[in-house]
Length: 308
Image 1 (cartoon, one colour):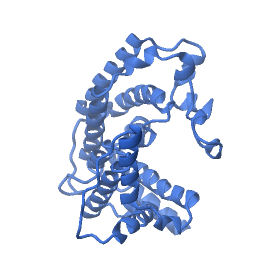
Image 2 (tube, rainbow, N blue to C red):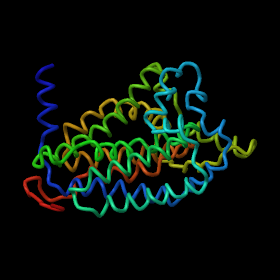
Image 3 (cartoon, rainbow, N blue to C red):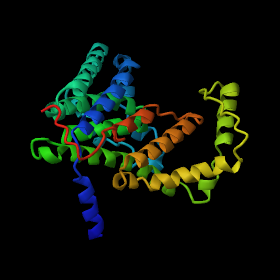
Image 4 (cartoon, one colour):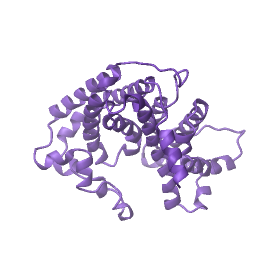
């Protein structure tokens, strides 16, 4: 156990050039701005207060009652606790906050490294506050986890304490965000499913069921899975089990952080997120957020002094 802990600490403190911080903040900021420009948070200003102040806790079954954003924990983590004392924003105020977040994200992307934490705090707080209202409807929690996790890292890790190791701390912490996201997804499959059930999910059947539901019940539409003749039918059954296993092996992302291996993980999980789109679960941002951690710099030994 001590040896494992020492290896974790050694890897966590592994030095990285400052370009990785630029890479992380630019990728996250661009994705966030895109998501902000594709929606209008001002519509929350027209929702009844009884609906707007619901909790994910109210949506899920009793089995998840202790794990799904219960009050007051949800209010504290999304900064919605301020509405214990002040009224909810109007539509105009929601719109104003959305635009402030867009400008702050752009500033985060282009500002010198020394301002990263300050702007990271601003972006994270407004982002988690606005998306908190989306989470109350039980939506987008998985779709925003990686982005908000990266923003949280930028917001909490100080640079002044250790400028030499700052970039390494940021990069390692962001890698851990990816590890937590995928590893605990695998753990959930152990909790929710028996090993036999790992082999009972059939992508083609699930896709066909959703297509039929759309045609007969006007349920939400999904793309029809393409006819790939050269793959045996068992491929679609085994693919789920393979995915769950790779989820459980996600800690290797932290320890084996070479460019080739991270590109493999990116390709695998991009394929995974594409496949889930055929059953109505498509996290588009997760295709691109991996660009924050795939090494784009030429060599770790090169000391790039940017933004000082």
